[in-house]
Length: 271
Image 1 (cartoon, rainbow, N blue to C red):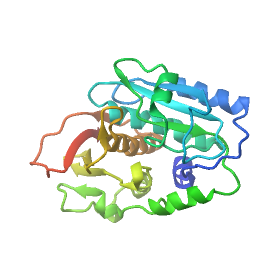
Image 2 (tube, rainbow, N blue to C red; image 1 turned 90 degrees about the vertical axis):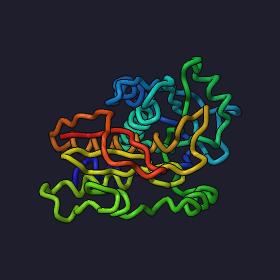
Image 3 (tube, one colour; image 1 turned 45 degrees about the horizontal axis):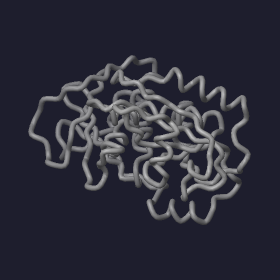
């Protein structure tokens, strides 16, 4: 099992922190890493580190001292770019022993947008607390995890397809021994209320990423939250390929059969 797989498999959302705040060493490491983050869409994501306060807080969190907010310019593919970049920060934080959780709604959005000096052409889709997990989850966190079935995921045959959306991808017959692990890393990706809206279609030697849309996930202040989720899944896929020494090419452009009404194309990976 690869190092990345171990991180993705072990990582969980943390809503209950020990109240210590980050060490200066870990904070410096995370800040320096955030400066180097890129995404294949070429859209910069701006990371802003903020101290928790009465205004900068969330009712679903306990014991947090620091936050990271992410801002991205309003342009095509902004949500997928944001998800891809922000997930890199989340995964790196976990590799340092730092807990995080994607927060998109349960916060004082206006206060966070003001604190990160949001520009006129930007949106701030999500924030995350950063800190060390408490020894025990709060009752509130335990109930939330049960409510969204945080520890369950869709079956692979519901997410990955061959040629069309009626034929599941035959992962058991994969020529490369590491390919099933790669798709397991994608399957384990986090998503808003654990909806897992990504669908991957293998066709003509390429891997096409789609969003299976649900109602209620689009707003002016956030954009399309489920496209952010697809960006997270894409991040796991591409980082998994790179760990195998492969240099994948990510492009935007799909021509094929007519898609179901609830399916929207996002990006293509070739390797």
